[in-house]
Length: 275
Length: 251
Image 1: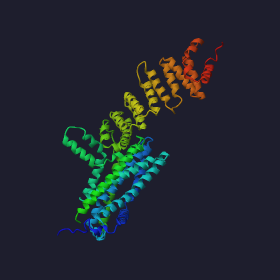
Image 2: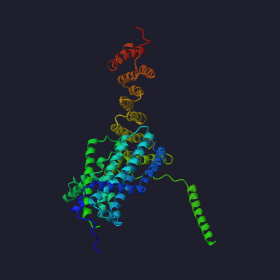
Image 3: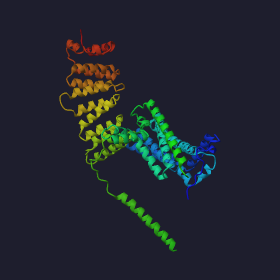
Image 4: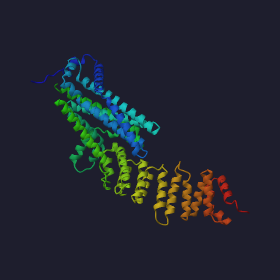
């Protein structure tokens, strides 16, 4: 038995007639946010807080007075790790779960476009990620303040840019989830994060000049993989370098554009998919 | 009845296992010192593979370096891999001042003051606003250096440290003392003059004592020896210093 195409094609007037796309997106986003928060995802913040407090006590005894620096470095590492794991694994199953549970039929029986569905899901999960990262970032900020005796705004700035990186990986994971299984999408999403850390290395491969094919392939990979390190200011949080905010802002805009492209591709793929 | 017995037996087995685990942990012999030669990756590897996490990697290796030092200083006093660890940490995080200073002193225990000296020089290049690097470099040259020039070299390091804003006021005195010891009287006079300018009563007394030790007793020769101060000290401070140095002299 062939799968049923549940909703009308994109050009169908039924899909465009209401003109209430934004409210649809908002409703789906709010619902997704409620659904993911209900999954006790905010427990991550509690776990993070406990890990950080225990870490602070432990580091205080072995780092020879460098608790503040260690807390910033390892804290931001934990923010990245926790944020990435939460968002990648939820994003990988977000679309897939709706399709497999057939709840998507209920949604698509109403005048809801597939584009609104994908974008709404992304925005809802973005809110969840924002809540999780804000919780961790603010806790880390307070802890560093308590340890060092002065506030470190760079911790908050670094957390905000980690959020942008996580958003990028989330968009790519949602794209993968429209064509692959949840596990595979999660693995691919994590691979994109790792590859995004190595973007500059890929670029250097294009300049080796040994082989035209390798150079071309490296160039393609360099363009396709998001350059996540360009917006990373973790080293600046421990005083290692002064960030070039102009450059960071440009690269942040690049990542926002990357997210738009990834979501557009996800929508295009999902529209052609039979569910 | 049978169920109750089975449950009791299961509880006893679990308790016996838990007791065994605790007993083993509590009574096992202390861990022997590990191999002093450990694998330390190249800094290049981390700079290429995880540029965004390089400071976190540096922190992890700093903690490892502290543990490595602590373990071997209590046992075999072998620190074969300490120079590589210090290089890795400070290359990944060039502004991690505590790592330089810890490694510099630990490398003395490793019998490698030469590496300590190089490390401090590298730290000074990366952190020119931190007076501790040239001050410790001066101390290491003075303490572990060889050759006739070592006092003068140490003096030059202290001089650099003294020039850093916010450095302690004893540094010019140290520099002057070492310059005098090294035989460079003119430089020593200038540096004692700077120490005198540092302001507090203690600094001025030390400067006068230091100058008394290196200046000739004969009045004219003493005045000639103090000539470099005319260009390097404010007039009022110079007059005050001269008054102290020529107190016992009668026209």
